[in-house]
Amino acid sequence: MTTDSGSDVLRTLWQRQSGSSFSMEPDEIQTRLSHLQAELRDAKIVVYTLCPGMAIWFAYWLIFTTQPIITRAGLLLIILGMAIYVGQIWLYNRDYKMAVVNPDAAGQKSCVEFYRDELVRQRDINRGGSLWLRLLTFYAGLFFGGWEPLHHWRGSGNAPRAVNLLIVSILAILTVWLSYRKSHKLQQKIDDIDGMKQATGTDPS
Amino acid sequence: MPAQDDLYREVVKEHGAALERLVRSYEAGPEDQRDLLQEIHIALWRSFAGFDERCSLRTWAYRVAHNIAVTHIYRSRKTKKLNLLSIEELEEREQPAVSSSSAPAVETQQLLYKLYALIQRLNPADRQIITLYLEGLDAASIGEITGISPGYVATKIHRIKRILAEQFRKGGNHDDR
Image (cartoon, rainbow over all chains, first blue to last red; front, side):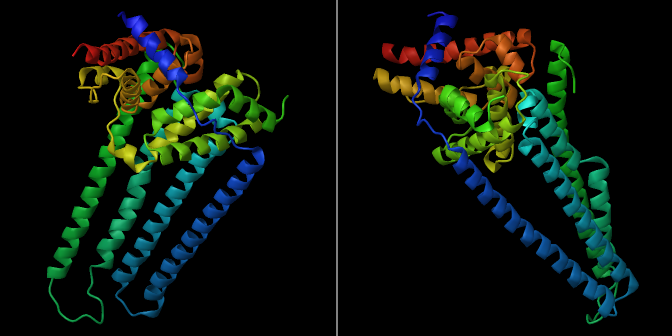
């Protein structure tokens, strides 16, 4: 059996597969879309309730307690770090939705371009300024927030500070390592696509 | 220009079966397949609001379907754990095992399972080329949909054919045992 005939048989076999003739009526699609949008709205309400709730809790610590100034600064940085992270995720999801839901995008872009855009979006959130901004803010917050013992705690000495420094450092190093490892893998895939496009003479994006 | 609903109905009528085969090449489980198929149908219907006829309806439909499927699998936890390969890498590795059978109908089904197992291990670009090739599209049409030059597509198809033929031969050898 030759190579061609073998693959042609598979081609025939592939095309002969029976389907369930799945289809949806436009009215049904619109109803489903409404449900999906309602679910998304509910999820947003939870997020928008949770985030201010946490911010209020931290604000209470900052304003109504007599914690040392360094602890207050730390808590403020933690709030800021979390706000930056939430903001970055929001921007990422917005770009994703614009790419997928936008009527023009999915049909006008070739598959390679579309795939590359998705990889670039995922890579950018895992490295560079985006990563360091949230990382430095959040981990600096954790570090300063745990520097001074809280007022109602008893005990003294530098042991808690050393433990705090150690834990925060390990967490920060781990986060950087995991993020850069992921972004490196994504970059390799992007490079493969660019290499393929250059080799075949199609326009690089 | 035809209305959004008419374009959607036309695509479902002409390419509905192809869309189902496409979905099977991205997702293995029946429930996941149904979810992805619904997602593609919704995206298709929405996309026709912006269809400008700069490409054929078939090209548009395949682009939307593959683009939605790729984002779907890249956001799936199951796929994140998989190491997707290029066709060249797949050629160097051991192929997924499928038990042998002498019954022709069962063997045909096994061949299809084997084909799906092989396709589901491929990276998106190679997966798109192989499924479009199996749908009967030529290199130029595949190039238009994927954005890869027809020459490169032809080279890929040649490799894919060789691997598929090898799989097919292995399947055929079961009868000789």
